[in-house]
Length: 238
Image 1 (cartoon, rainbow, N blue to C red):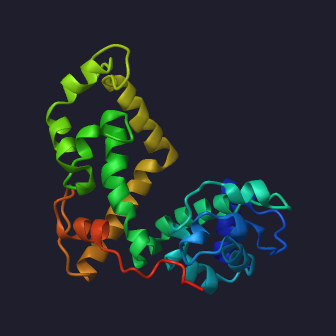
Image 2 (tube, one colour):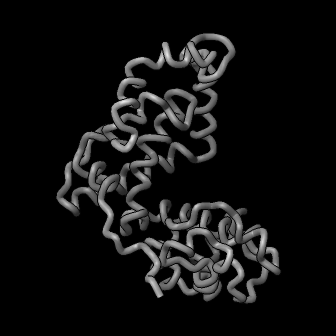
């Protein structure tokens, strides 16, 4: 048995996700991601079950493990009660821990998620921070969204929200003591360490790619991983 398989076995998601795969392909048949991407949950489980370190490393470095949308349709159909979606979660975590995520286009996008959603959670308490979702990152929102960005208070007052206000209400300001508790949860559970690992590995990869990477999103590496698409991810037409 390979050491990486033993490491995966320590992850509760892997323990719950892999019982006794019979390689029937039902998970791939129901998988929404498999309809669009070069992606087969069955093949991933098959690779993991080889317990071969070299094959698992190749998987950890690949685009494949980042295609899953975690809808868990696979769990609802598997005749043996497996959940490839949970196995994917364990593989993604291991890829981040070992720094392999930066070897794939989709994996490198973990930095974008960390510096947007991750940063917003810890600084505001919300995974989607409205001021952060501007047309610089989402040009498809158009000029109306630019107007809303400048007039959030008036817009949400009309909708009955307590936007960035004290006390109860939708989109209220999260008290600082609550944010401190949230940050402590991240620290104790290893979330903060995981975030730092993403940062450290991304900086090394940026140097390899000769791209600038400093704080925030206005730098070459962030803009590259956020916008670049090699167009090689989609399922070949039959």
